[in-house]
Length: 193
Ligand code: SF4
Image (tube, rainbow, N blue to C red; front, side, top):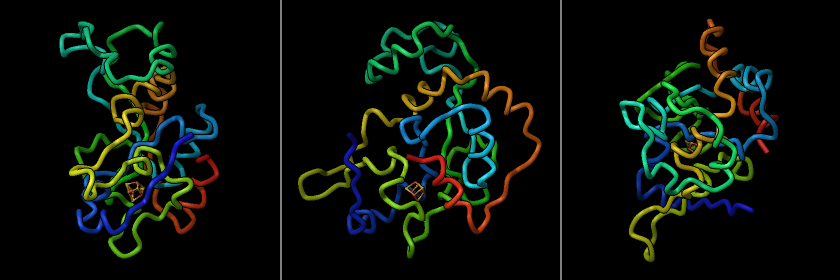
């Protein structure tokens, strides 16, 4: 059970740095189900990008296994990927698109497409990706925001590793950028828990 948190006053003081740095990652835990057909439909909403961790989070740049890659990776995620060979060149994940972002977008950063200083996030808190909605904002007791260890970019990309071939297929098949539409958020909500 995840406790979602929202403290707009704290975020405002912080100038919404998180949402201005990138659209948040969408974990498999956020999705009702996942397969190739669903991935295409999610991309067609126009507000989701495929991004990736450069290389394999389990390996160094030479492709050798890192001794400590399992540190901070939840047991169930390790169990799911334990038989997947090391050495992928991209470890894909989904995230909310950035402003001017593309459907396939290994961006280094940018402001989230769904963020606006006045309206805040356009995804209702109860459906908001856990990578964003489980961050505990800094306050008088915590000098820094605290992110959930389960929803780091590394863990989320490792979660999708079992669907690597689906992402590879889409990566090569997709020939368009799906645009933002008036009902994009509504469409995405069909796939979010
Ligand atoms: S979807 Fe919402 S919470 Fe996630 S980065 Fe965009 S504005 Fe922030």
